[in-house]
Image (cartoon, rainbow, N blue to C red; front, side, top):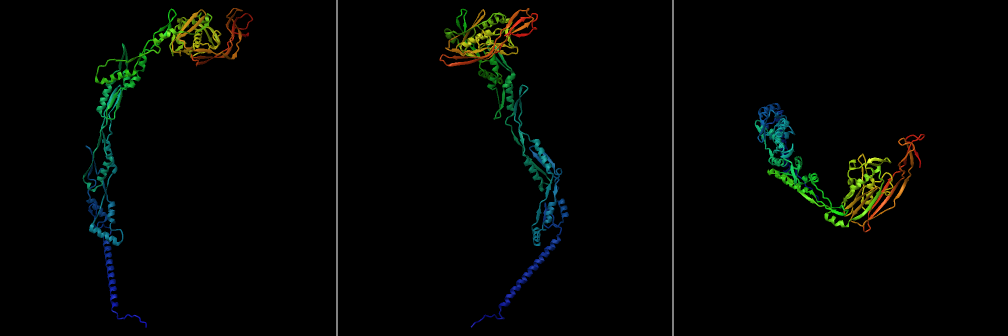
Length: 622
């Protein structure tokens, strides 16, 4: 059988559950009513403060409870300290500058604080606003007030004060002025932390507590001492002036020499050192460099031993002569020592030059040992016609006599013009032949014809196997000279000089003998034999140019009279090679002498007769 549970309508648990629920609903309704009442009360309170600042609010320590904005602003202006009543006092060391608050326009900015005070309790919902009201009433709310002023005026005052007191450190120095040395004094530097001073001033001016008092801002200057002081510079200047007070007196035996004070000043060096001192010195190298000219003046060059012919014609030795030279380094050291002693006030005597002996390159002993071995190693003879073209031979014999007996030391050069000296009428020379514009002028130059001398000694040197130097051929070929081996010399009016040179490239002196005979000149070279051999090639001739023979009619001669003034000479180029070998057969010189000879037309002057061509007419006859 199936049964079902049933609840009796008379069950006692049912009424109890319904009572609990009713109590809960009643409680909730009471809470709601209380909240509504609270909100209403808060809203009523808020409406009572509409447009007013909440109780408990202060700005800058001034209470603004329940005041509207305008009244609150009035109270603040009345109760806050006068922002313009005090002054800012800037102190840097012993220097002080004050700025009144009024001068910099110091004042309150109240709008921000009033806006913030009025906004309290006005944000959020009713409950949030109510909470703000309650909290402000119980605990209070203090707001800061902003102070403003002319910041640029304060910055400018600080900058001006710092600029007036700061200064860079100045190192002492020494400089030349008007021939003297002057010390420039040192000055300690002063440095001020402008940024920190300016920041401290601004911090003080924005604090409310400094409103009615003098605000003191202080900065200590930092002093930087110079590394080089005035005393050291002055001592250096005094020492320098003592050193350059005068020139330097030098002496070489009994001969005095002077170095001017300007030169001494140029030597002196005043140099600052790392430790703050100054070095005052005269560098030896500078002094030595300036002694070069004096060294040339006092130098006595050695004379090598040489050879000569005695009156009997024998070869003899000519002793060498030692030379003297300045020792620049040692002399410079003496000068520096003397100059450095001047500041001590010592008596100064002339400084003796340090001289050294200079030995000759070829000694007397060498020459004496060579004499028995000397022989004639080469010679050459040139024949010439004694005539007006060589001043009756004098223009050849005089330079030959000048050269006769001259000795050329080993390594030295023979230069024709240097060997014969001055050419002038006073020396016995006269007018002689010269080639001008391809034509012979029989008496066109003083010394004309001298080339017979230069060509002869040139050929003697060639055959001695010596090292040859300057040489030039004549304008046209002269058949009394070896073809391609002539050597002309001249000096032009424009200053150009053509010389003939050779060098003694042997170990012993060369002794030159010049021999004059009527219509002949001969040169011989004497020395210790070297074993050299000399060979010449046959002349190579090219580019031949034929000359013409002509008649030139003139009124300067009697009719029918004929005079030959120029012979026809063909032109051509030639090359002659010389080979010099030493005793072992090795080639030591290979020279090719090139000559370019112009063609010269023959000229015979003919005195004009009636019916002949005009004066100056030329007729080719061959």
